[in-house]
Length: 541
Image (tube, rainbow, N blue to C red):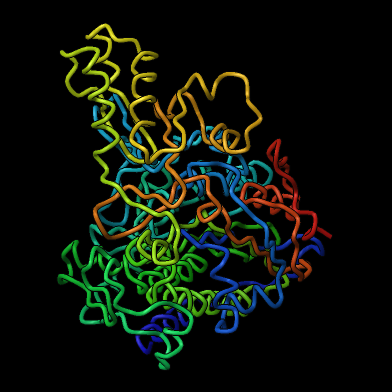
């Protein structure tokens, strides 16, 4: 804790004084779009009486939408962040998954992969926002006010870039290649002075020797609000109990990976956000600026330990503290009355299937190769010379090697139908959607509509697999994930704070797709809501 306070104090001391000219009465000087990667809504209710920082402020003084759900089925980080920033479904913005099989490169690539760009400020991924097929909130703000500043800071490259959009001043993320903050040459060809100064501090390296210990001194609270600490199926049965030590030594990538995959990583994102506020002079004049932030600690801890673990509880409490510090700094430097804050999430997460099984639920996990093997066998039964025709399987996606199918004289339609039948016969799948199923006339089925909202024909997988509820594709025991149309992956928070936003709890249906159009209305920027979305009028005065 003392190390974190030192970092925060250093960020405060280096911020300098931001001009505080009187804003227009109905328009904030700064919009802050917060995305918490993998934040389930029930975290807010389960830990309500333990919050003392940012979540406490949001719950007590903000507008809280208690029935907010993602309106698309493939609930993953990249489509979630793109939906939040553009106010459009993946069917429109074109980002359907975290990874895709790209025949141009003959391999799986990340959503924002762009080999024509390079990392700036340090070593890192080659990324850009060119995959976006529509405008983000920052793009629309720039179109109306070219002098406005748009900046995103995140743990992951895809989160920062998809929140920032195409016309942003910069998108920054923490690279595990160097433990430093980097951006893409798409935005800037040289590192700005403030970024170079930030990286000289080597904040990641200063965590060497640290261990992740419980945030609260009273360990009995963890037993009361979570399950026992040494639940054997957590993290593949390895390192299941506090304290958790970071592997490796800086500058090893292993050390940086462990740091950013622990509850400590969000502290670096906060320090970077504070430095970016100063470096870009955000909120310094009456033209509204946009700061988009994504914290991924919850996601990384949730995958390893599950949402009912003591680690997940500890991470949420640490994030509450981090958000509290952020809000205090915004209040001191700009003023929350001159700031509009929106917080939401890109997806939730499935509890560990072993945890669900103990509660009497029909929950199972099954090996990843089961589905592609079934598809290959079915096609080889009809075409013995086919061999492996599945190019890539990343649940819930099946991509065929279309070049191989063409060489064999097998139509894509035949491969899709044979694959669909084979997958259904495994017993682990609820339904399989072919391209023709999602391009034809809608059936009116609610789940199908969610898949249609996730479907973008030029990039969507050839078969989309709806795995059964409470089922997960992974090893015999271990981690968990998301990506389904079920409520545990779709029910997320939406909260607003600051400016003239009223406080209260609102039960009307809403979704993260509604957040950007609502923020646009607050700052007077044209951005109509999605056809099945709405402006969140409860926060508009």
